Each structure stands twice: as structure tokens, then as C-alpha cells.
Image (cartoon, rainbow, N blue to C red; front, side):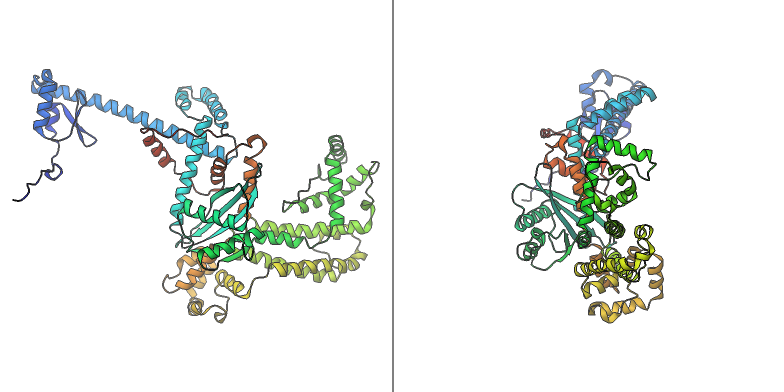
Length: 607
């Protein structure tokens, strides 16, 4: 015997008959039958069910004649519509208020302010709204900006940004990492991991993957383990499309046998392109200039004047009375890349005033009157200014590695020009020397300082010279029309020839950006060239973004906020460094749905 099939309501395609509204005082609301009198819902749109409910639950209304029912139905429908509009308006206002709370919390985190700053901002808003539009004060009062609310909002935004990054990473063709480690105020080692990826449309994403707090040792093994865990837990990706890793060159990062990058290569099972931060190497190159006898005196004088309150105030008043070019000296900070050049420039600008101010003081600096020392000061000031110009060129986010290499190459050519000109006694590119050193001594001193320039050239060649293959690859991607096809790898030779013979692509390369140029190439015809371009664009040339983030970290975790937890600090770092926009509407919707369910208790962390 065949089994009897059950009836399915869905298959019968039952629909609500509009005549039932006047007949049984009911309507459709959110795909369900709703009684206009008692607001009870009926699951099945069947006339028998509606009539039974109407006659059983509302017998008095069932006795009304048809005209009276029509009037009654119209009144009930109007009443329902009004209440729904009120509810919708309240719901919209609540969503807007929640969205504003998220937006302000994001700005608090991005500005490095305490979580308690929300209360102060709300107080200011209420003062403003009371004067400008007092009728709206009630809405502003509903904006929740308590410490715990701001803390939760920041955590939710951080999670949303991580989810967005995870989605983008899944679309990457290739990506690279930049890593650096430093300690915070509590001596906790914080490992920053940034990812730079590129998709098939040549859209580059550069974001913080995570900040890993390392409580114990920070060996290469510890760092590599944290990187693997962070990439798996936060992005859910493997290392198949990893192209390169950029570090600060520390032994724990780049050690030959047990460095973090070496251990990552063992874990992945293949070699990775390793880059030592170009900016860091440029700073190391500058240390070959042996002018400690100049810098030590400058720092001593600056510290003598600035470290004592009375002397500092007297010095500033003296400068004001002398109508000096600058109003004060600058402290020297060794770890800041540009500090030395700025200190020297300010010192030279105020050298005469400094000598007058210290003339009658108890501590003497005979170097200020020494001709040879002053000549070294002028030269050191000029060459440091040139080094600072290069450093500034190399700084910034989203720098392409071949642009950074081109800047270094140009600087090396400038150094060779300086060496040649100084050997001839020409100081046109050393303005401080030209202005303060007599013309008849240019030839003698030019020979002396040309030797220092030569040391700098040798150090740049030793540290910042690319291999032949890397140099050709970078030239190829920057200008594929200027390379010799025989110099590139075999899989690229035919594609390069085809490209160089295309007048259309040659004009495109000249008139548009590199991104637009490579996006315009035929995917099949120039497959290998596009792949090399994607890989090259994804490479970090420096760890500048890590250094910048450490500055933000120190600004947030200061003496006043020393108890800031590592999780909250990571949330702040993600928001402060992200180029992505939080999905506020999605966050509000999630918060609205979450309010219907019991949530986990908020964490009690410091501000």
C-alpha cells in the first residue's frame, strides 16, 4: 500500500482575499494574517479559520451589518498604520543613535583618547544642542557614550575591520608581510604584523593583521610561531601566495639558522624573498660618517641650555632680544630618523647667539671658536640635510619598492656628483659650507670632505645594491619598454617583445598610471608579465608602517593609561591604522538583533 502523502500548505498557494478585511476585520502584516481587533496572528490564510476566530473571539462585532463592518475595518486599519509608523520612527531613531555612538567611538580610538572621553563629548553635545535646537535634546541624550559602551563599540569596530580584511585577503592574488617588534610602557614585547596584498584588479590593501603580545622570550622560534598563529586565527589563510617578508634586519627576524623568516620558510617548504627595511639601511649607512666630535659638543650645549629651566628661559628671552632667526634649540633623539639633521640646522642657525650666551658662563666650549671644528659642523649639517631628504622620500604608506630603489639609486648618483665637485673645490650643493667657509679654503677642505663622501658611497653600495636579477625585474615592471628582452627570464621574453611592439600599449604606459597600464593588458597574452607585476606591487620596501604604528602605540599606552589591556590596545591600533571604513549599518543591525538575545557580560578593562 502506498503511503498517504501529507498536504503541504505551501503547495496550495493560498493567498489572502482582500474582501476578508471588511468581512472579518483582519489584514496581512509581515506575510501573516493579523486580526485588527485583538492583534492575534493566524497561520493559515483560510476563510474558515478567519470566520471561526472572528465569530468566536469577537461575537459582538460579528453582529454588525456590512456597512458598519466597513467603517469599523477602515478605523482599525488606520489605527494600525499609525502605530506601525510610530514604531518605525522610533526604531529608525534608535538605529541612528546607535550608529552615531559607533562613529564617535571610532573617532575616540583614532585620536588616541581615553574611553572616558565619550562622557565629555556627550556633555559638549548636550550644551550645543540645548542652545541650537533644544527640541532635539532628547535624541542626543539617548546617544550612549559611557566608558563601557565606548569600549564595546571599539571592540566591535575592530572585529568588523578584521572581517572586512579577511574577505579582501580571500581575493588576493599575492601578498607580502612587514614585521617588527618593540616593547610598550610595561615592557611587554609587541609584535606587529602588517599585510600588503593585491587582487586581480590591481587594488592594493595595506592593513594591520594583528599585534601579538609576547610575554616571554622573543626568539626567532617564538616570533615565527606567533606569525603562523596570527595568520591562521585572524585571516584563515595559508602561505601559498606569500611573496616576501620585510623586517628591520634584527637577528631574531633574519638569523641564518633560527631567524623567524628562516623558520617560516621551513614551515612553508619554500624560499621567501627577504627584505631588510630600506629606510633602516639608509640610517645605518649614515653612521659611517665619523663626526662624533661635532655631534657630542652640539648635544652637550643643547642639553646644558634646555635641561635647566632658568637657563632655558633666559636663553629664549636672549634670542627674542637679539631678533634671532629661530626662537629655541631642539633636543636630539637618537632613535628618530630626522632628529640629527634638524638639531644641526637649528644649531647652525643660532651659532652666533649661542656663543654670545655662553661667553660668560661657567662652562666653556672652546670648539665654538675652533675654525676646523666649525668647518666640520657646516659640512656635517649639509650632508645630514641631504640624507634627511632621502629619508623623507622613502617614508610614507603604499610606497612601491621600485620607487624606493629608484630614490636610493638617484641619491647614490648625487653622492658621486658631490664627490667629484668637492674634489674640485666646488661647494654649490653644500650651502652652509659655501656661506660660512672662505672661498680660498674650498679646494683644501673639498679634498678632505670628498673622502667622507666616498665612505658614504661605499657603504650605500655595500648595503643597498640590488642583485642583477632583482634590478632587471624592477626595471621591467617600472618601464617594460626600456629593458632588453634577452635580459629577462625566458617565460617573459616573448611577452616583452609583443608589448614593446605595441604602439597602443606604449602610449597607454606613457599617459596613465602603472596600475591602469597593467590592468589594461590582455590577461591571456601577457599572463606571466601581469603575474610578475602583481608580485612586485605587493612587496613592502620598508617597515615604516610598523614604526609609525609603534609611535601610535606609545601615544595610547602612556603613563596615564599604563593599565590598558593588550586586547584593547590591539583594537585601537587596528582602528588607528586602517584605511577601511567600518560597516556601521551592519554593526547597528547586529547590535539590534543581539539586543533580543542575552549577551555575554561586558569585560571590565581600563580606559
